[in-house]
Image 1: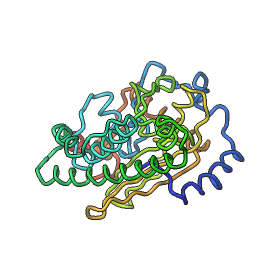
Image 2: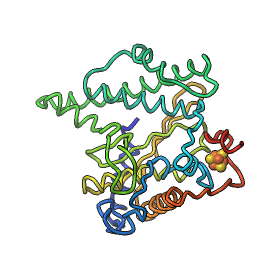
Image 3: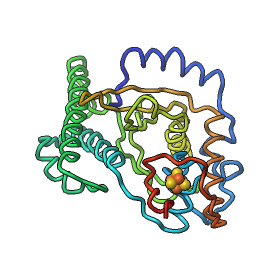
Length: 301
Ligand code: SF4
């Protein structure tokens, strides 16, 4: 999922990295400037999860109020459950591959399927998740094997650990503390390529139209957190879009420069949402709500 193909590598090297070097980033918009405005949160006692800062799914941000002020639990639907399942498929497979503790897919699924739970769960839905998770598993495994095997054949004197850490150079589900930026709990970054310094975020979508500009806020937020904790520049993000055409897996990547505009946008979202939590303000209903919003039951009452 997270390996770049030839075109993506060219774009990174010839387009994004020179752009990042030429344009630069304002010092106050670096994560390591967390101790002063605008990076420092205005409400220091309030904390918010990364997914609520970055999600623009609810047009009025009522989801933030419901979740953090009213303590409402969302109703998980098939779409959300599929996203969770495929995330776990990729992250657990990659972790096992890197740790050389790979198990058979069907054995892994036997344990996994017990945790699947969504509104209206039925056998067909679970079987669909099984087929899709299997596709994602074999696609990811195939790519890992190819990268590892190529690296092995080119580095006859390198030890296994060295080959693994340079051919599959990923921190997967990296746990990191986002509290310096007003975020709650330990965050899990889908993937961080530590050789190229790219933050990846995996998104499962139903159709091309489901891609949203605000999805870029997730890698942007994680880049800021990495900068705040490790004090190293992180300037490239990548969204990995996964979808299915019938049962065929389609993977597309969107690489981008995490510029000042994106950093400012992320801060604006964080501050606006922390304000809702601190002031316990119900922002009310928007004119239109997405059909499959996970808070629909609550808002329709
Ligand atoms: S149902 Fe509408 S108002 Fe309620 S959280 Fe969802 S999008 Fe927001």
